[in-house]
Image (cartoon, rainbow, N blue to C red; front, side, top):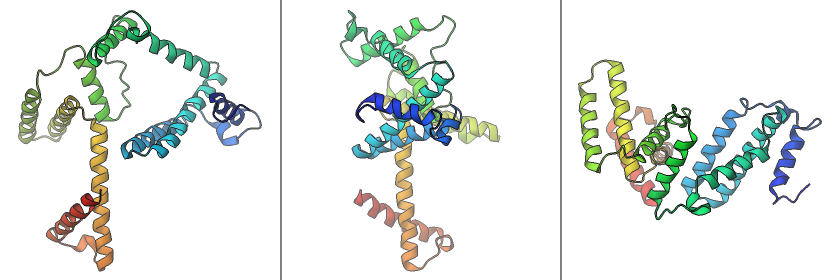
Length: 259
């Protein structure tokens, strides 16, 4: 067995778990059966990043790496590819897509890098394939929206300034107010979210992270409200809206000052 710090040690452990006489549970798994686990590990990595917790990030990155090796092992058993093929593929892709580092192309700033990146990806795609076809449709909706907006922006399809996006947002809000049918309201609401994501992208804001942060903030405040009620022997649902709102403001002041 290689030293634990060696990447091959992880490969060896996964191989042993999947081998005859290994772990019965691990041996039963397929790409589909552990699909949700892969997604969960991705979210846990993001949570550690958002929390700025380096120790937790180290652990979660290990869990995510294990998922990669696990899927590669399943693929190898199916005769599809090996972990070596996975590594070779990404190494070759990184070198190919960074000619300004490994070749003769020049890129003086990040904008130039992104332009070169998109040109290279275009050359790799079949002629009749859209540049948006490679965006995973299973991505969370906010992340999906931000990704497709970013891709088209790299080829010049973008607002000239932020005011255009804000005007568009105002237009979409007006259309939502005028909508009468449920399907119309849903469509217009989607347009508002899409435009908000676009504005956030232009400001360097990650929409998924921003909304997760808002959700965590709301959760913290609401838990504080529940705690106040328990301390006072009150039933939250029996409070009037004004009383609930009073607790909310108290939680907002105390919770936000603590963070």
